[in-house]
Amino acid sequence: MNPQPPAPTCVRHPNRPTGLACTRCGRPSCAECLRPAAVGQHCVDCLRQDQRSVPPVRTVSGAPAARSSTPAVTYALIAINVVIYAITAAQAESLMDNQRGSALFLDWVLFAPAVADGQWWRVLGSGFLHYGPIHLLLNMFALYVVGRDAELVLGRLRYLAVYLVSLLGGAAGVMLFAQNSLTAGASGAVYGLFGAITVILIRLRQNPNQMLIIIGINVFISLSLPGISLWGHLGGLAAGTLATLGILFLPGWLRVKSQESARLVGWVAVAVVAVAALAATGVSAVALAA
Image (cartoon, rainbow, N blue to C red; front, side, top):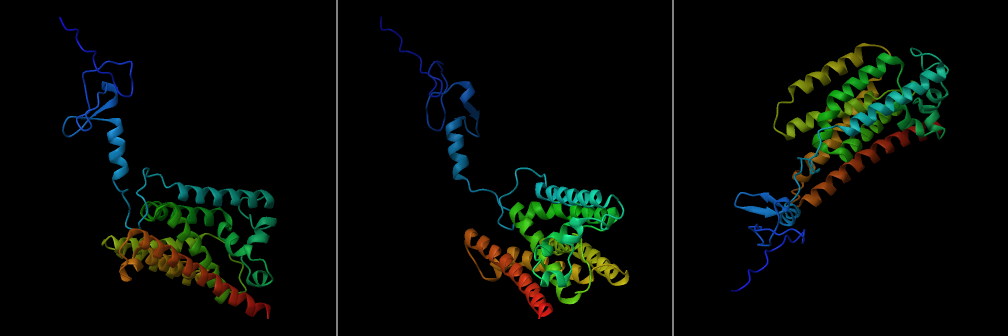
């Protein structure tokens, strides 16, 4: 009488006899190492190989589709703005009049002659300052509303780049056309995100009228009320819109075929807008220093 051959063992767990096998590669596998498939069952090694061979899902901007819907960069930007406001309020010993008596506010507020004197950190730093809690809350609420969707479509890095470029554009507008003002706030960046969302809606072939109305209302308010930086808002709007156009539309206009080239074109477009904003700021600073 011939002895029975030993039962095959799992390729991943040699101490486990099994009568099961992967229907793709045929290797014996235990129940723990198999997953249901459309036909039969596949081992975890075959599943990993399939996942590596499938190209990643990307948004219309070319960014990898986020695994989580949490807008981490938007939350981080809000947190930074709130922390900086808290520092200025603590230095001023006043929650309402944080701009009075705060050394940080005095050092960072955008004042064109100070930038012309070499204090270039004000160009970005001013975008994280706010005049009082209402100014902060309005900007952070707007950032939360528009930032979430923009971040999901653009991807975290592109979204952050558009935000910072919008800050630079707003500062350039102030440097060119409002040189005697003391400007602070994230409004220029928020207006840039207004423009970005509008471009995103057009790219997705959705109706942008609601965003256009919001932009129109906000520009009207900027024109009507004193103490609001119209040129900072318009500069940020222009920079954010142009940067997003470069990301979403310029590769198609140039008939770029590969995704890698399209992503490169988008980054170059964002860099060009940033350089243009810095150049405009520099020209104004040189003129003031002369």
